[in-house]
Amino acid sequence: MRKYLRNFAAAAAALAIAGSAPAWAHAVIVSANPTADQHVAAGKLQVRIEFNSRIDKVRSRLQVMAPAGNRTDVPIDQGGAPNVVTGTTAALAPGAYVLRWQVLAIDGHITRGDIPFVVGS
Image (cartoon, rainbow, N blue to C red; front, side, top):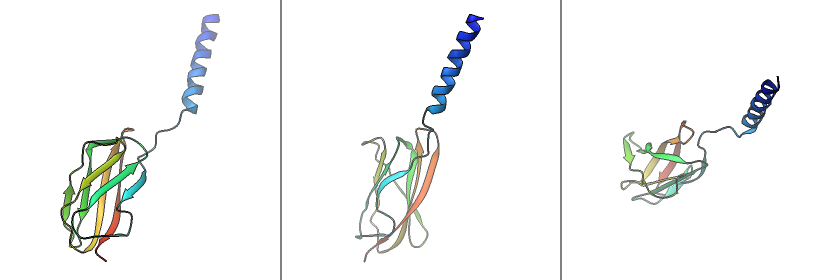
């Protein structure tokens, strides 16, 4: 009976600890460049998105949607902080663009979104 009570107490303690552990959440943007609806100068754009968790950069992607609807991949830099995705676009002409991002967080979930921005004044 003592062995049973000891095992029961150990299992109850493990459940209590697991129940109080924080739940994993999807990657959420902490800061970004460009920001939504930001006006930027024509030319190449340094993209930088910081997340609240580590990102698998190899399995993530950045794309720029041009005013005409064309999509262009933005190569992701593999160095730097593990929660920051960076890359440099090709030269951008004036117009309304959308930065489309998709990241794989360490929790195994894919998060994606769009950041609209404008090139030129």
